[in-house]
Length: 468
Image (cartoon, rainbow, N blue to C red):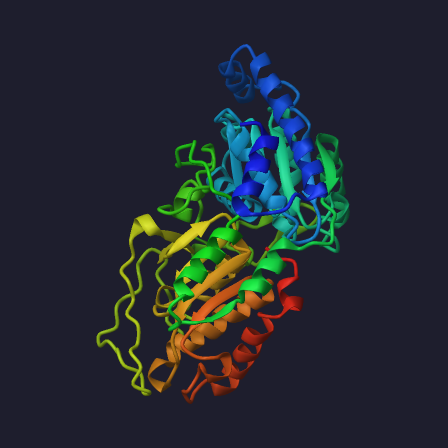
């Protein structure tokens, strides 16, 4: 279907009104779509591209891409995903930028003994990718900044077209970062290969929906499940496409489908669990960048993951053990929810451990409280969730008492990380924020959590940009 027609269809199905700025962006994306189709048809053989990418010769010059930037809630991701869905060929890939870079660093670690490892990574990507779509393009990590120029140059040399969304224009990427002057050539290279399109406008559609629907719902209300489902469907960035198998960095992104799916599959299974960071790793568990000028970039000690509720190390590959005795009733007499078993077909993988989810699509994930806070979780687990998702739904949050202090500590840590990265948090809970905690040990800390839960419902908070 033509992209303009797909956009009009989505407006009708979702009950949206046409936005002139969005319509202009769709026209630009539709023009790119047509140019990509023509360029693909002009290739005598896809195999010629593969052999060209694998050798020293350059592939054909890539079709000039598009970089969409603007404020939150303007529909950038939605429009890019409509474009992605409309492409009538399988050589495409859609990734969250943070996840993509996680996989690149893991791939580089496996190629440490190889000459020109970035070229090898680009080879694997270009084997089946003509169009690479990035959501939330944002550079804050020096390890990313130091390799992006070489990676992009290698991908463009192999004829890969880039389409991206971001909250900042290219000239402001990595602003204030360490040794930023060394990143400026990467910005120049990016601007040579994409048209920079500002998605202006005063309407924040995500904010309007969240403020209308509410983000803190009572667990026992009969319509809460329906309201959470509607919010998930409206916030989810795209309906998805599953045109590629999952298995390596060279695979296209299969992460555009509703569950069942896991982020281990989404990242191709090649990602290093960040809890098993090697020596000379940065705070994300990535191999540090060795540079003759900068020295070793990143921390020099391996990370040790411990449960935020205690000091015991967490094994990255083992599911949390069930407690010897179930505490099914809290002190107020309310039933305490039980933890569901981990189903690989409806879970995501964070830090080498599977976490059950109710739904996950695009930039939105929906957890049951017990799956997220009932077993051992490290701070890194919650950091990774906060970086990967713009919106997080947590349902059936119980009232905490002195028998469930560990769960309260984990919930405090979760809220802190989501708050720090401006994640939209939608919850259903057994009590208002100020009445959620009735224990003894973390009363002072939970006062901050309750205050943040209230603030996170405000229009001012919901209008903030996500910090991946």
